[in-house]
Length: 320
Image (cartoon, rainbow, N blue to C red; front, side, top):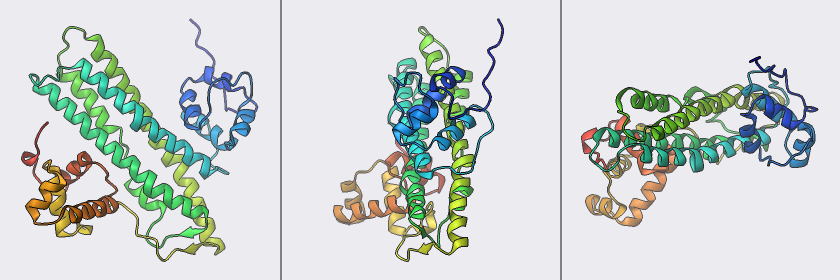
């Protein structure tokens, strides 16, 4: 069978259905820009204009994910951030939840199979990392960029801080895929395991591409805005703006480190208060401060943080 000829660079005058036929992954790009189905034979430019989306930004992302040349100039950070935020919603509220449901169906999670329980625990820890990663971007990075758009600079933070620490979160999912492929025996109904592996591989690829969009389109666009504000002298520093960035153990008080250790051990706020001779209100305040400093919002995420930073040992953690 002859291979279908691939379209060249996508343009505003191309019909939306034509570029989707050319690359079905453009469906994800559409949904993350908030474009619904039912667009008929209208062009990319017409659809973007109707939805209030910057056409050049849509085309830059569509061309990038399709392996075409792409334009990094004149991007709309507003449109690009909406795209990234919707992508985060897709991953956190649907994709990883759906994979977990299928994973439970495909492996024996009754408690008899230790490998199955470890696979599920591995996956849950991975999801916690993804959630912390994306919530940090939502609450810190995008807030910073929205400030830049209002002409507000920050002496203690720039997009270079984000870029230097921006790790691609698809690697652990690749590890999970390899563990299942190499070590989990296929029993009856193995088609379920094949199906969830297919979903894991797709999610791994989608996450890698998502991070690449951030590295190749989002970060350069923010750097350009920072340069404009700095060189023009129009930017102003917001003196009350809190220092942004990912936390480290050195930023935490001794009491906060103790509380993270208790959380990692599965203790409730009441149990922590009793152990440390504090009020529940004080523990709640400490937990809120920890979340602000570390930008980690879940007990699972804090557990991983505590292990990595040696606030607790793996033997202290109760496997559920």
